[in-house]
Image (cartoon, rainbow, N blue to C red; front, side, top):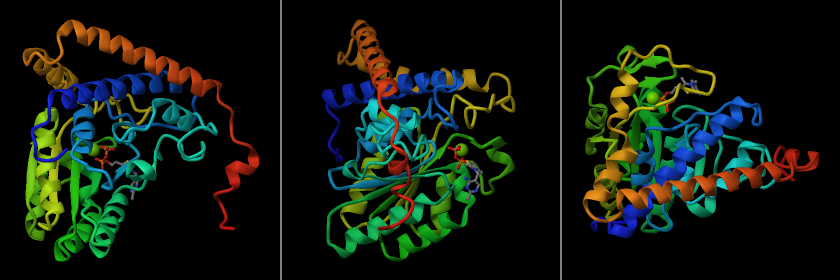
Length: 324
Ligand SMILES: Cc1ncc(C[n+]2csc(CCOP(=O)(O)OP(=O)(O)O)c2C)c(N)n1
Ligand SMILES: [Mg+2]
């Protein structure tokens, strides 16, 4: 998608994708709680408009990096839920052959060049890809998704500095969900409420955006992407959003003030787009009920097939450890 206004089909597909991510993660939570999947997971429920609206601004050949909270970006880039479920279950049919798990949903063929468990680690990787595009004179752009906590990590400052110096085609996207693990942002982050101001010392545009409204997200990311693609250099965008669940599956999020979650759910990103699509005559409330049921059936089938898939052999699990 470019600066062109998104058409009705595009916005309908955004709605489907957000529903798919929501239903996928509901099932993930159930599978973890029942012990069907081991390890941990970090859900992005509440943040779907950021993933889907931003990815919708990418063109073929563009790439992105994201974090351990990356299910939304992976599915928005077109990873099949069955492949993602299988990866979380450690199955051979998973996107990384079952050796990556929840924090590493990666698919180079879809521009998903890295999901990273190390806070801040994706930014220099996206910058490297962007500099590569420059050197190869390819008209492509790299996006980097990271959390509000990551803007206090050294790599943030190193990446923004170098991106600005080299006018690299990269768009830095802060998913500000107000918490870094169990710490509210006010206890960890200086400089005022608009995190996009962190762009100022690096001489790049910084824009703070309502991350619950996918139309607004998409417009802001499209503008930054097109600027980068046209040689205008990097941008920093802040998406103001909220994660509905705790930090990871074992976190009941008791540190949140009473009523905060409920207040954010009043502005649920899926409901906001759903109401707008109905009002615009693009997808009626009745059709939305049918669509939700169809997506739930898709997710049920995908989880079932992933459950039935084989585990990798011992040789396969160790085949990525040493170079040949
Ligand atoms: C370099 C590094 N330091 C600390 C951690 C532990 N850690 C994992 S997630 C996290 C919070 C990051 O918060 P934020 O960037 O806001 O992302 P969110 O989890 O809210 O999506 C921390 C401190 C880590 N994984 N990597
Ligand atoms: Mg955060």
